[in-house]
Image (cartoon, rainbow, N blue to C red):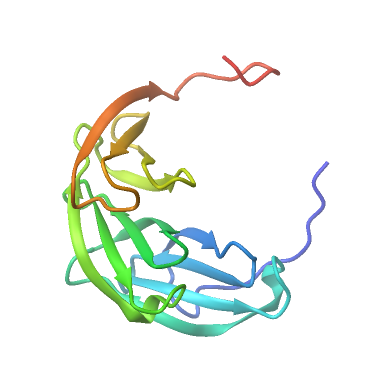
Length: 174
């Protein structure tokens, strides 16, 4: 059973919020917005409680590299920001000069995600050597391997594609 706990209005920042990501300790919420091509950073007054969101604390304009930012992921102890965009079917990597502070982000590299069309989300394994993308163009989850952890600029291999348009049984294995 799920019990509603509250909400936070993000439209003061952007009317087209696409994704969210929490800092590991739950004290910061990040969102991507494609109305203004921004990644927003909000401090929470209480960890993991979105009704305690303060105003935007930091932001990163991605428009010069990432129009219509979709999925976001912060990795490598908060020093890397990955942003997927359906425009050109790519993921961009930004290096954060100050961990967990998106306003210090500097674009580092872009990687194409073929065969994925319109990627809308991204997630990294904790070791940083594998990441996953999903999009609404192919209805598949794609798994990617990196030669060096948390660095999409070195080498990337698409190792597995899984069609997620099916349903799961109660054991979540089919």
